Image (cartoon, rainbow, N blue to C red):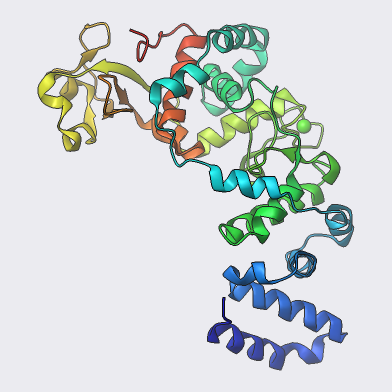
Length: 353
Ligand SMILES: [Ca+2]
C-alpha cells in the first residue's frame, strides 16, 4: 500500500515538536516508526516482523507496560502461519443448524454438565447469587467453550496475537488484544510462558479475549491473581461477571422452543419484533408441546435458526446478553438449550423429532 499523505503530515508534526526532548536518535526513529504504523495500519505487512515488533514494543512502553514485562514477553515471539490459515478459513456462521446442535449438545456433554453442576453446587450458588446469573448458564458456557476445561488451547497467546496483529486483515483489532495480553502479564496474573489459549486468542476455562479479561475477569478465590485457567472460582465468577455486564437480567431465562401458527411463519418482520408473551399467545404461538404460553408482560422475539426447519425459539433479553459473548445465533441457542438440559428444565426438541 502507498504511504498516504496524512501519515507524512503526522510524522512531520511529531518530529518538529518532540525531537528536543528525546534522548537518542534511535528512540526518535522507533517512535516515528510506531506513528507511521499507527497512522497507516494496512501497511503493517510491508514491515519486517521484527521491525514491526520493535515498533509495537515502543507503543506498549508508551502505554505503560513495564520494560521487564516487554523483555520477558516479546523476546521469543514467533509468528504462527497456521493461525493465519485458520483465520482465513473461519466461516461467518455455520450453515447447518442441526449439524451444529448434534456436535455441541451431545448426550455425553449434557450428562457431564449435570454431574459438574452437582459437584460444584456450592461455589456455583455463591457466584450465581452474587452476579444474578444462574449456575446452569455458567456451566453451559464452560461446556461449550472448552468442554469443561478440557480444550483451553495450547497456543502461546502472545504468539497468536502478534501473528494476527501483524496480519493486515484485522491488525488493529488484534493490536489492542496484544496490548491487553501484555497488561495481563504486567499485572502479574499470568507469566508469558503460561499465557495460553486458542489459535484466535481466547484464553482459559471459558475462553475470554484479553480485553474482556481486563474488563471483567474476577479474582474470586482471593489469591491476588485472576486465574481463569486453573481456578474454577475465578473462571466461573469471570463468566458470570461478563454476562452480567452484557445485560443479563437476573430472574429471567434465555428463551424457549415454540411452535408458530402457519400464518406467522413467513412473516419475518413480525417475528423479529419484540412483544409480550401475552401478545405472542394471542398471535397463536404455543409451547413446543402444544401447550399455551403463560400470560406475561415479559417481552421476546422469535428466532428461526434455519429457514429449512419448522423449529422456532421465543427469546428474551438474556439471549441478547449471550449474543454479546458470541454473536452466533447457533451458539446462543446452544448455550440456552444446554443450560436447560443440564438443569433438566427442558429438553430440546429441535432437530430431534
Ligand atoms: Ca484468583
